[in-house]
Length: 121
Image (cartoon, rainbow, N blue to C red; front, top):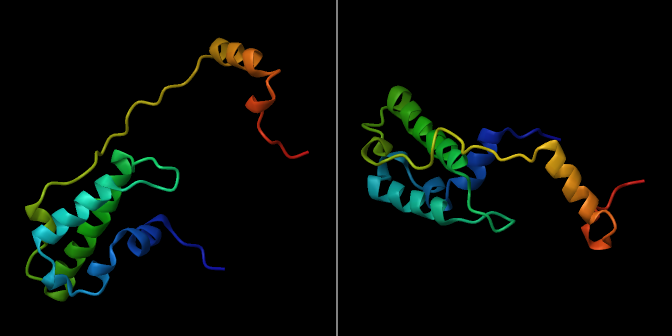
């Protein structure tokens, strides 16, 4: 079984089919903007939008593909340099419960069957 890396997964699943079937030289900044807009509005399996840091990662991977083509395969320019980056390089602050908050919540939900998780025995 092949182990797939995050970058491979992004390249295979987040670069739309209209990019896969096109030559890199034929992709314009307008095409990049359409792709970015689609990614920003996309919802994942759980209905949540992609995080800002994930959007930046996906954006950077496509930019690096174009940069590689410019450096090694004679592509004239990287169309992503003409559009703004999407996402954020910094993650939002994560919120955690303090121990006493967690214990108070656990105490309140302990006797409620709908609040329990299915644990393997």
